[in-house]
Length: 348
Ligand SMILES: NC(=O)c1ccc[n+]([C@@H]2O[C@H](COP(=O)([O-])OP(=O)(O)OC[C@H]3O[C@@H](n4cnc5c(N)ncnc54)[C@H](OP(=O)(O)O)[C@@H]3O)[C@@H](O)[C@H]2O)c1
Image (cartoon, rainbow, N blue to C red; front, top):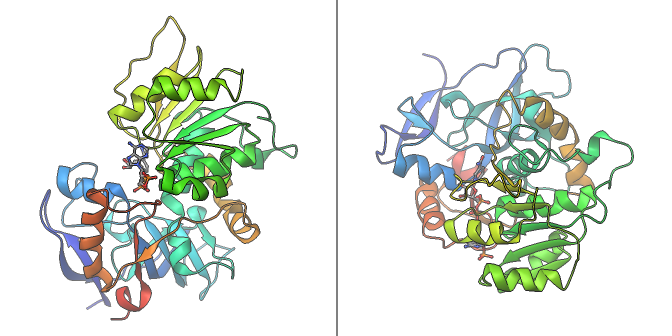
């Protein structure tokens, strides 16, 4: 029998999670086998369980935020070797997910973890960062801003304002940091007032309480800048934040959403609405995300990108259930989610 590992299965569509075992896959060309030390949780994981979206093959293993140790290197992979500490963006498909002891990763969307970061902090990065990267810089699923890491000049969005709704969410925190890297100014973000310090620390130049109405926010922003608001990134994309975003967005501006649009593109004002898709593996995203993953280790070691704050959940794979429930109930503030530490996930 091939070597086995523990995994947390969703046995059927909208079923209940249960622990089981499955074989450890072998890496093909361009892939790594990673011994998982930490898997972070995302809202999509409980949405798949509750609403039966995205995943079509069951039993399914979920979790796409991965940190661990390279165990085996597939053919043609030159920049990683056995024993490297890495973070990676998984994909739905049981050999490529995080709620188990071992996973395959695509070397293009894997980066080394610098010594300054732990497995737990690194695991909070992949999904949120890719969603921010694609939403800001993607041509198909984003606002089409020029990625600053692909030009020597950088900072070319200087003096253009950007508004980020949900600046303390995982996605929102990375959008703020990338907006800073791109040179947007002012960077205006909303969150609960208790998270003002955190959001400013990520690089927001101006902060507003998320409970302000669209009219109140518009008036407040009008005191900061005369420039039209050409991009609003609504990281939350609930009905109430979408209507605030729509109120703020200038003619010909772009609204980036993380959930389905409830507002309608209006030809008269030329405003665009884009539902982003933070999947690095999507054909439209591969080139962009490949280029950003190539600098993730540098960003983390230089502090250009700070991982999310996080809480380590106890009980390894079992701890994921309670963590997802807390995410669903909105009981996790200041962004990230839980992490299941290696000791529990991998070697319990
Ligand atoms: N389309 C895609 O490819 C894609 C990819 C990733 C995520 N998503 C979706 O994007 C959304 C955000 O994901 P995430 O992982 O960033 O979430 P998260 O980190 O779990 O977000 C939690 C934060 O959301 C904030 N929040 C909740 N309601 C809010 C509101 N009405 N206004 C402003 N902030 C609010 C809270 O901030 P405070 O504590 O400060 O109030 C909370 O800390 C989710 O719906 C997720 O499913 C989509």
